[in-house]
Image (tube, rainbow, N blue to C red; front, side, top):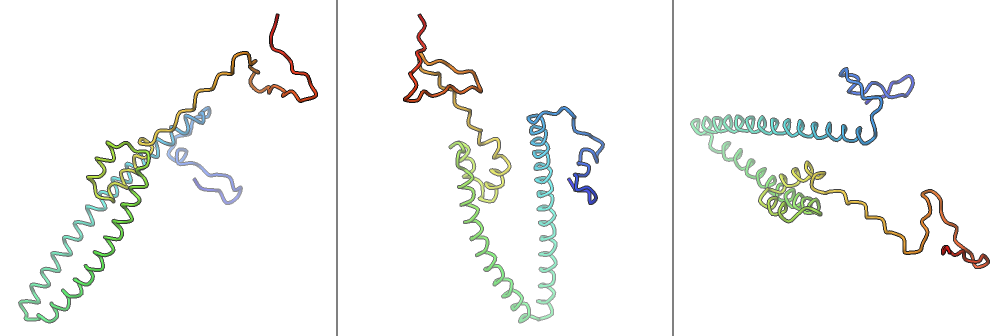
Length: 187
Protein backbone atom coordinates (compact mmCIF):
# COMPACT_ATOMS: atom_id res chain seq x y z
CA UNK A 1 0.00 0.00 0.00
CA UNK A 2 1.33 3.47 -0.73
CA UNK A 3 0.56 6.89 0.68
CA UNK A 4 -0.69 9.71 -1.48
CA UNK A 5 1.56 12.78 -1.36
CA UNK A 6 -1.28 15.28 -1.00
CA UNK A 7 -3.30 13.99 1.90
CA UNK A 8 -1.06 11.42 3.56
CA UNK A 9 -3.98 8.99 3.32
CA UNK A 10 -3.45 5.47 2.04
CA UNK A 11 -3.73 5.07 -1.71
CA UNK A 12 -5.55 2.21 -3.40
CA UNK A 13 -4.76 -1.23 -2.08
CA UNK A 14 -3.66 -4.08 -4.31
CA UNK A 15 -7.21 -5.41 -4.32
CA UNK A 16 -8.57 -2.10 -5.50
CA UNK A 17 -5.82 -1.89 -8.13
CA UNK A 18 -6.78 -5.34 -9.38
CA UNK A 19 -10.44 -4.36 -9.53
CA UNK A 20 -11.39 -6.21 -6.33
CA UNK A 21 -12.66 -4.19 -3.41
CA UNK A 22 -12.51 -5.64 0.09
CA UNK A 23 -15.94 -6.40 1.51
CA UNK A 24 -17.36 -3.44 3.42
CA UNK A 25 -18.73 -5.55 6.25
CA UNK A 26 -15.67 -7.78 6.64
CA UNK A 27 -15.02 -8.75 10.25
CA UNK A 28 -11.59 -8.66 11.81
CA UNK A 29 -11.45 -12.46 11.93
CA UNK A 30 -12.44 -12.74 8.27
CA UNK A 31 -9.86 -10.14 7.30
CA UNK A 32 -7.15 -11.96 9.25
CA UNK A 33 -8.11 -15.25 7.59
CA UNK A 34 -8.07 -13.60 4.16
CA UNK A 35 -4.69 -11.98 4.79
CA UNK A 36 -3.24 -15.26 6.11
CA UNK A 37 -4.44 -17.02 2.95
CA UNK A 38 -2.85 -14.29 0.80
CA UNK A 39 0.39 -14.59 2.78
CA UNK A 40 0.42 -18.37 2.29
CA UNK A 41 -0.13 -17.91 -1.44
CA UNK A 42 2.69 -15.36 -1.57
CA UNK A 43 5.02 -17.75 0.29
CA UNK A 44 4.22 -20.48 -2.26
CA UNK A 45 4.94 -18.13 -5.14
CA UNK A 46 8.21 -17.03 -3.53
CA UNK A 47 9.24 -20.67 -3.05
CA UNK A 48 8.54 -21.36 -6.74
CA UNK A 49 10.61 -18.32 -7.75
CA UNK A 50 13.47 -19.43 -5.50
CA UNK A 51 13.36 -22.90 -7.04
CA UNK A 52 13.49 -21.48 -10.57
CA UNK A 53 16.33 -19.17 -9.57
CA UNK A 54 18.32 -22.10 -8.15
CA UNK A 55 17.76 -24.07 -11.35
CA UNK A 56 18.87 -21.12 -13.48
CA UNK A 57 21.95 -20.57 -11.30
CA UNK A 58 22.84 -24.26 -11.56
CA UNK A 59 22.56 -24.13 -15.36
CA UNK A 60 24.71 -20.97 -15.48
CA UNK A 61 27.30 -22.60 -13.23
CA UNK A 62 27.40 -25.70 -15.43
CA UNK A 63 27.87 -23.55 -18.55
CA UNK A 64 30.65 -21.57 -16.84
CA UNK A 65 32.40 -24.76 -15.70
CA UNK A 66 32.20 -26.16 -19.22
CA UNK A 67 33.70 -22.94 -20.66
CA UNK A 68 36.52 -23.02 -18.09
CA UNK A 69 37.26 -26.66 -18.91
CA UNK A 70 37.44 -25.81 -22.62
CA UNK A 71 39.77 -22.90 -21.88
CA UNK A 72 42.01 -25.11 -19.71
CA UNK A 73 42.18 -27.73 -22.48
CA UNK A 74 43.14 -25.05 -25.00
CA UNK A 75 45.87 -23.74 -22.69
CA UNK A 76 47.23 -27.28 -22.19
CA UNK A 77 47.36 -27.81 -25.96
CA UNK A 78 49.29 -24.56 -26.38
CA UNK A 79 51.81 -25.54 -23.70
CA UNK A 80 50.85 -22.76 -21.24
CA UNK A 81 51.18 -25.01 -18.21
CA UNK A 82 52.48 -22.34 -15.81
CA UNK A 83 49.45 -20.08 -16.45
CA UNK A 84 47.16 -23.07 -16.11
CA UNK A 85 48.83 -23.98 -12.79
CA UNK A 86 48.45 -20.41 -11.45
CA UNK A 87 44.79 -20.33 -12.43
CA UNK A 88 44.11 -23.67 -10.72
CA UNK A 89 46.05 -22.56 -7.63
CA UNK A 90 43.85 -19.43 -7.35
CA UNK A 91 40.71 -21.57 -7.74
CA UNK A 92 41.91 -23.93 -4.98
CA UNK A 93 42.50 -21.01 -2.59
CA UNK A 94 39.06 -19.62 -3.38
CA UNK A 95 37.50 -23.06 -2.84
CA UNK A 96 39.19 -23.41 0.56
CA UNK A 97 37.86 -20.02 1.67
CA UNK A 98 34.42 -20.94 0.39
CA UNK A 99 34.52 -24.26 2.26
CA UNK A 100 35.30 -22.45 5.53
CA UNK A 101 32.42 -20.06 4.95
CA UNK A 102 30.02 -22.89 4.17
CA UNK A 103 31.04 -24.72 7.35
CA UNK A 104 30.44 -21.58 9.41
CA UNK A 105 27.04 -20.98 7.80
CA UNK A 106 25.98 -24.59 8.36
CA UNK A 107 26.81 -24.25 12.07
CA UNK A 108 24.72 -21.06 12.30
CA UNK A 109 21.84 -22.64 10.39
CA UNK A 110 21.95 -25.71 12.65
CA UNK A 111 21.63 -23.47 15.71
CA UNK A 112 18.77 -21.56 14.08
CA UNK A 113 16.97 -24.79 13.17
CA UNK A 114 17.36 -26.04 16.75
CA UNK A 115 15.87 -22.78 18.05
CA UNK A 116 12.95 -23.01 15.62
CA UNK A 117 12.20 -26.61 16.67
CA UNK A 118 10.96 -25.54 20.11
CA UNK A 119 7.42 -26.81 20.45
CA UNK A 120 7.67 -29.16 17.44
CA UNK A 121 6.72 -32.81 17.95
CA UNK A 122 9.44 -35.47 18.19
CA UNK A 123 8.14 -37.21 15.05
CA UNK A 124 8.64 -34.09 12.95
CA UNK A 125 12.04 -33.45 14.58
CA UNK A 126 13.07 -36.95 13.49
CA UNK A 127 12.07 -36.23 9.90
CA UNK A 128 13.78 -32.86 9.90
CA UNK A 129 17.01 -34.40 11.22
CA UNK A 130 17.37 -36.15 7.84
CA UNK A 131 17.40 -32.79 6.01
CA UNK A 132 20.32 -30.37 5.57
CA UNK A 133 20.24 -27.41 8.01
CA UNK A 134 19.29 -24.85 5.34
CA UNK A 135 16.30 -26.97 4.27
CA UNK A 136 15.30 -27.47 7.92
CA UNK A 137 15.20 -23.72 8.56
CA UNK A 138 13.35 -23.04 5.32
CA UNK A 139 10.74 -25.73 6.05
CA UNK A 140 10.29 -24.63 9.67
CA UNK A 141 9.78 -21.00 8.66
CA UNK A 142 7.25 -21.88 5.97
CA UNK A 143 5.28 -24.25 8.22
CA UNK A 144 5.67 -22.55 11.61
CA UNK A 145 2.04 -21.48 11.86
CA UNK A 146 0.81 -25.05 11.35
CA UNK A 147 3.35 -26.54 13.76
CA UNK A 148 2.84 -24.36 16.80
CA UNK A 149 -0.79 -24.33 17.80
CA UNK A 150 -1.99 -21.43 19.86
CA UNK A 151 -2.74 -22.54 23.42
CA UNK A 152 -6.40 -22.78 24.26
CA UNK A 153 -7.74 -20.38 26.84
CA UNK A 154 -7.97 -22.03 30.24
CA UNK A 155 -11.42 -23.00 31.42
CA UNK A 156 -12.89 -20.49 33.84
CA UNK A 157 -12.72 -21.54 37.47
CA UNK A 158 -16.20 -21.83 38.95
CA UNK A 159 -16.81 -19.79 42.12
CA UNK A 160 -16.72 -21.55 45.45
CA UNK A 161 -20.02 -22.79 46.84
CA UNK A 162 -22.05 -20.08 48.46
CA UNK A 163 -20.23 -17.27 46.73
CA UNK A 164 -22.61 -15.08 44.75
CA UNK A 165 -21.68 -14.50 41.15
CA UNK A 166 -21.58 -10.85 40.11
CA UNK A 167 -22.92 -9.98 36.69
CA UNK A 168 -20.22 -9.26 34.12
CA UNK A 169 -18.94 -5.73 34.24
CA UNK A 170 -20.05 -5.20 37.84
CA UNK A 171 -17.48 -5.84 40.49
CA UNK A 172 -18.66 -6.76 43.95
CA UNK A 173 -17.53 -4.30 46.59
CA UNK A 174 -15.08 -5.70 49.09
CA UNK A 175 -16.18 -5.19 52.69
CA UNK A 176 -13.87 -3.14 54.84
CA UNK A 177 -13.21 -3.67 58.52
CA UNK A 178 -15.66 -0.88 59.40
CA UNK A 179 -18.55 -2.37 57.41
CA UNK A 180 -20.34 -5.44 58.66
CA UNK A 181 -20.10 -8.40 56.36
CA UNK A 182 -23.31 -9.15 54.45
CA UNK A 183 -24.58 -12.64 54.55
CA UNK A 184 -25.71 -14.35 51.38
CA UNK A 185 -27.80 -16.90 53.20
CA UNK A 186 -31.55 -16.50 52.68
CA UNK A 187 -34.17 -17.91 55.02
